[in-house]
Amino acid sequence: MVQKRMPASDGPGGLFSGRPALPIIGALAAALLIGVVLVAGAACGGGGGGDSKGSADDPFHAGLASSTEVAVEATVVLQPTAVPTTNVNLTKLGPNDRMVISRFGVDAPLSYKAVGTDGQMPDPETPDDVAYYDFTAWPGLGGGPGLGGNSIFAGHVDSGRKACKNGSVKPPCQAVFWEAKNLKADDEIELKVDGQSYKYKVKTNQSVPANSSEWDKIVAATAEETITLITCGGTFSNGEYNNRQVVTAVRMRV
Image (cartoon, rainbow, N blue to C red; front, side, top):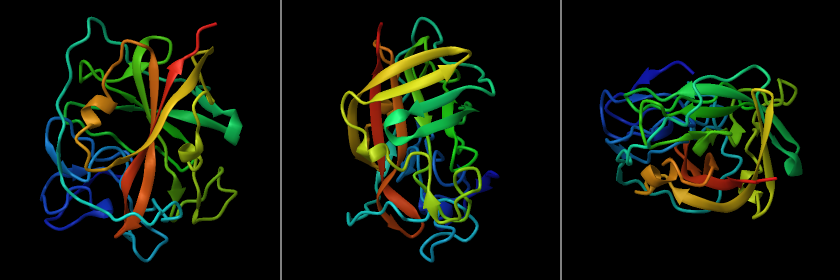
């Protein structure tokens, strides 16, 4: 999605409500601006596209995953964490790198997204890919499969105007992380990176308010090799979801 500049009122996804000239990057991963005050921020906005409640110029989301919860907006201050001794983020991905969640039939390509010094987390490319975030510019955040830390991934839960499953399912449709909310403890997630296979066991699965003050901790590097999956959840209103579904899984050692 093309990067946009926000007007004084809510932009697509309503992520920076009432805050002019702050950049946003679309519907899903946009809005993690580390160290600044956000409204309803952190990895996954809305953007209805195909839904009358959403923004017409944003293809994500359709509101298919909406619950009956009440949306809330508040400010969030995110702070960089302590500096690690080495950088454990991946600095590139290959065309064959994928995430596999066998329980739900997910076998998705990974797309590489670097988080720059402005702290912006770009969207995944499509409803079908999973974005991996390189936090090299933010020491103490993120990680890499096989390297350690906390590898951060995001994927769409649904799609308002873009077709799913390589164009074979017309929108509105269920996207790659549609079933993320149903992952249970000990479910397996596999990452195939650079010809290697890394397997992880789900540890936690929780719904986190978009306005939570915990996002700095959620994306922080960890001593035990971990992966974190983030997608939308909660109530869909005015083109955005008010919650984020956050799944953590730890590396399985053979």
